[in-house]
Image (cartoon, rainbow, N blue to C red):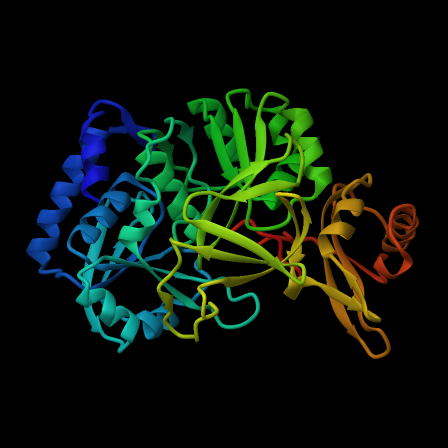
Length: 445
């Protein structure tokens, strides 16, 4: 933490944030950290206490995190689009203090709640006098899990300074990838342009207005951007890099994005809240094959499943048994193909559809259907079937109205050209609602 703050001091006039159209320098950041340190003392917020922070990105929120970390508090970010209800979150990790920011991210209220939870992992962190960071899993396969990190370990990943860049912290602040992004931007003395409304129009407008160089996002958001046509209305030429992760990227979406942004480099990122975000390198621009790892990470594949060993791993779950084996390896549940040192992510084991003993990867079917006319987006998932175990279901969003019967005929005929019969959707549903959640990730159900 000290090294990070000293780095900020080397570039006092450099713009650290653009928030609500106002610029904040690194000198402003350092002053705000000091101001918050005084505020914490006046409130009597003490070392080792658990502080739930209800917020989105802003200079004040980031500076509060640093001030809390400096006195070894346990920080629990909570966004308005959280994957866990606040009362359930507090039952898992406790809450000595609740600090909530208003919609501007500039003003806050602090409330002492004194909710304590007996947890040995938290107790050990307090004994070591280290700050903590608690994130919650999406809970897509069950109840959300509270994931405890040593905040010093999280920050240590950015000890080596990289080239500064102007970027939007797109993923939410209570998503590990979001925390990783904001630390990466600022540890490199770059500029974070915060956008409260993550709609396609607002993001594209911010890219054009502030000449954003890096957009870290999700495949679902890029698919939505293509469907909306918003990229035609804004100058996105400043983008030099677009990174994507959290879910499998359809090759169709990647190819189309490459065509509309030919000067931008597209690269897949890979990480999990349990192990951190690995360094990645695409085999070639526009390829879904990537090399992952970097300092502090090891990878191996067992029965087609990716396993990771990480120096930046969580301390453990607060409400579930550890999923690391005795040697420190974590089963990612991601099915992969391997070609030498490169991996291709096929999908989560939990998303696989078993049709009469045959495996169907939803992303493979989605990639085919996305190539069709009048298809804005598609989510493929399994539905229980008495004879086959499961059948393939495709839920689609259309660009313009079309009869369901005609749509079924078109989709099945088109899929026959590329897919084996058991992979072709048996059931097709039209949707008039978004196929992704508030974290811009596809919902397959």
